Length: 350
Image 1: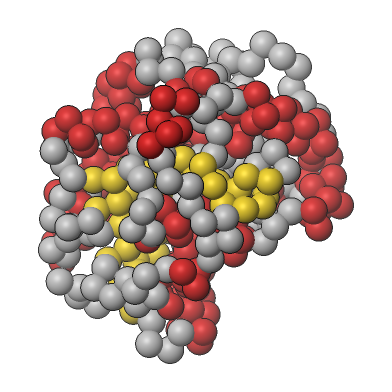
Image 2: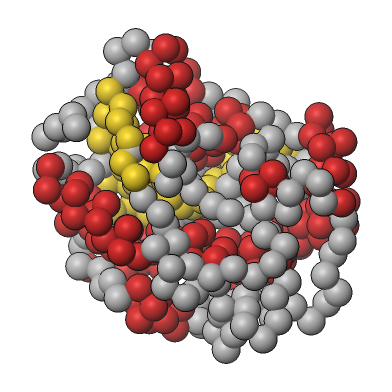
């Protein structure tokens, strides 16, 4: 019941401009393979699917990480409009209250609240999970949205892990595992995890997962998003095998105008300046949220799949199945990644 109270070691030269990075990402996405064996059994989403196509979410409880801005905020807003009970989980309570005020201004009847969490601090993740378990009877949808991108210097989390891996992947791995009991109480549980077209140029280096030997901001970001994608697929396989009844779905937004650059490389960096000049070519945060919202709400959304925009090398455009990078489709190291993630987080799925 709802109770009201929010790296890989890179052997190539580090790219130095937005244009170089964008070209690299597009090239990687264009070369990424698809899971051909599933191609004939999947129904393509309606290309122009929009929030107007969302079924009613009344009675559904949804948790969105990083929901105070960007696509996470758009997720929370759209789900509130559809009648869901929405929990925004993020680091900054003040920004959380601002987000709630803005949502309620747009949707006066919205049932939305804030929970504080720092995904780069496993104690904070455990605290959030404990609070939710103490007051909820179920959780229907978990949207693992929060992320940081390419901080210029290597940082470490409260637990000593590389900051991008900790925030983008390990924190979400832990949170999802800790919330499994609530998810399994839902009749239609979904875990929607945000990857990126950057995953297409990522590689999983289990020998230097924390980028201790060499830190490349963009390669490390790509690795974290590849890890998210591999984990999303593995979660579906394990759910099927164990009968957990959870749909694990991955999504990516293409390239959307959000605060990710400002909080990562910085708008004053060469990358940031070129991005600012080209931002008119990208779509809005609201449009970037469409693949996530489809995965979270559409009855026909399939577990174990990957949704995103399909135009302009997946940077924007109509909704469809995203191309799965070969490294993500390769299952040879998926179990090893899962075991390492359990060891680093101390969380075992049940």
